[in-house]
Image 1 (cartoon, rainbow, N blue to C red):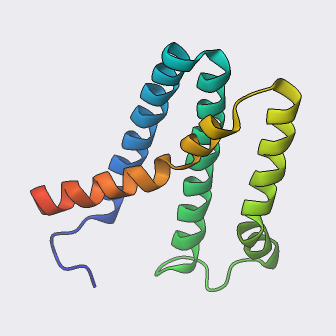
Image 2 (cartoon, rainbow, N blue to C red; image 1 turned 90 degrees about the vertical axis):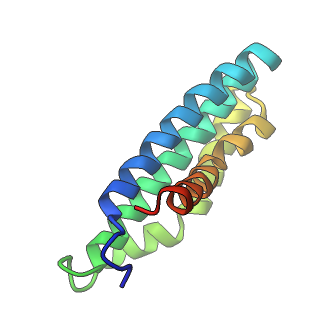
Length: 127
């Protein structure tokens, strides 16, 4: 499907590494530039983004070739409702600890940024 030169496991490994680097760099930059509330808010969003990517990847691999034929119903419901769950958790944490919501939203975008960087990597290196 992808051709002989594409290796999904290597791409996923790079994505996870890019997300970890972006999470660390963003947390440090926000903490120094805007303060601790911004840094921790970004870290919270980044951790949720990384967890969401991990769960989505596991779900997709479970229904793909060599995986389970059909995922359990509760897994499908949980995957579909994850954005509502994420919104509720982020709201509760931000309102409880006074973290910055814009920083958390920026942190939630690291999976998308990592995907774009991985696409650029593939264009350049063509692995």
